Structure formats: structure tokens, C-alpha cells
Length: 380
Image (cartoon, rainbow, N blue to C red; front, side, top):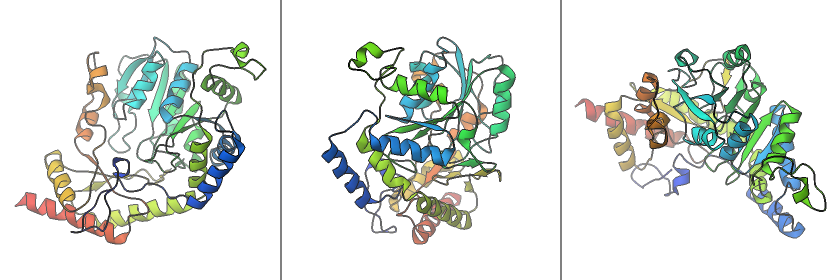
């Protein structure tokens, strides 16, 4: 988040911290692990820290974890592993472009659907005549939609269900990790996420066979180590491995996960109590336990630009998400697109507000006051 002396006591931050520093992590522990990496000389190729990170995530999610270079790389590996090249993969258009890009890179055709206005998750009633080969659901802004319905839809058609859960690490659905559903869930460790590894991703699956396939694919398709790894290539693969340094950063964040979750929940509740009228907070159904990493509001489209400018003048930078939506971006707009009215409308309304360990009650109240000032000025 950026700041000025007029209202909010924040220093100017790089673009990556546009929403405020997203995570807290043990700097001393990270430096200790970094020294250990340099002392050992093991920098990559599934070192001890990558394996420890996978074990930590497996304990949190209850599934088999495969660490990869990025969430996007993880999505591409998962779609490639499904063998759906040339076939339609159904997904919402209201998502970061990495979602369709990853599927397209894996050779799939992209079929977009609309989203539900309450959860901003895929609306299966808008699928139309598409017969998908796979369903790719996006769990946005720390929450999720009705995972049981998505599972039932996929099971009825005999197609795999996968999740882009870049925003949903530690999110639960009906008391269970979101990765309990579907074949695989892909989480992001990008610097803006709940736990950051600078870059990186974690794929979680309940299938040990699928996990082993992904491990091969992230390492050039090598099936087993030997004197000559080149002779052990058994399938297509690429270099999607995570380095030890990235794993160390993520592990340092995992050690403070409970504190981070508490901070984000505190800020969410503060916003809920202080947001002015006509600024609607995105809240998920009671069966979803969000990680609250994102504080997202919806406003009138005509007022959003004015709100952003007023916040900026007050030392606070909010962020627009997914406008234009993916079906209107050049790589996809040329293909025939369905009518996606909710996606088009919500893309003009969404605004993400600062949160994180640098944001406390004073800052939240100041941000809400700025929003109220802007709305009052617009009313005049």
C-alpha cells in the first residue's frame, strides 16, 4: 500500500504491496534457512526445504502436495496431465488471466461461464451448450462457492474437477479444506498472497498417483533418478521446480500463518463495522471460512473512479480486479463468447481495499472515512 502524511502513516511501497504487506514472516528464521542453503550447496531439485514445505502443506490440507515454480505453472501441469488438448475446459471469465493462459498453454480450448453475484464463483447455470472435458473453478478473494455442487456437476458428466485456489490457502468449506474437493487444487505463493515465497505454487491432490505424475512433469518428465537422468524421461515435462530459497521464504510464512489469519480477520471485521453506506462488503456464505486475505467491496460503477482518486489523494491505493474480464481480453475476445452479464457488471464494481499486518484500526477507520468523504462529495 502507498501512503502520505496527510491521513495514513504508510511509507510508499512497491507495486507488489499495493494492498498492504500481505503476510508476516519470521525474518530471522528465513535468514537461518538461507544460510543453511548456502552451506549445503543444494539450491534446487527437490531439496530438503521443498520437501518440508510440501509436508507442511500436506498437513494443512490433508492431501498430497507438489511444490512448483508458480501457481500458473501448477495450473498448466494439472491441465496437461488431464490430456484434454483440443477440448473445452470450462472456467469463469472473472479471474486473473493466468487461469485461461495456463489452460491454453496446455493445449485446451477455453470455454467461459458467468459467475454468481454473491460468491463471484462459477455459475453453472450459464454453461449453455458447451460440453466440457474438464471443469476449472476459481476460488476468489479468500472464499469459494458451493464446492459440493461443482463436484456433483463434474461427477455426473464424468469429467475432472480442478480448482484455481490461488487466493484460497487455508480457506475451508463446511469445515474441510477446499482441496478436499476435486482432483487437484492449485495455490499461489506469489508475493501478494497469504503466504508468500517471492514466487511459487503448491498443487494439492488426494490422488498419490496424480501427485507422482505431477512430480515427473515438473522435472522434465524424469521418472526416476539414475546416473543419466536423461535416459529416465518417461513422459512430457518441463522445468517447473521450486528452488530452496523460495521454499525457505514460504516456510518462514507458514510459521506465522495463524497470526496472519488473525490479522486479516481482524481487519475484515473492522471494515465491516466502519464501511459507509453504499459500499458493500463481499461476504461469503456461512459455510465458507474465508482466510480474509482480501477485503473486497462493490460500489456503483459511476462512483468507482472518484473513490479511487479520493483514496489516492488521502494516501491509500485501492485496486481494481479483473477489468476487463478475460473474455474481453485480446487473446480470447476474437472467439465467440457467451453473454456474461454478471461478470461484465461486477468487473465495473469491484474494489479491493488495503489490509495486512501494516493495517490496523486507525488505518481502517481512516480509509472508511475517505470513502465516506468521496461519496458525500459525489452526492453534492
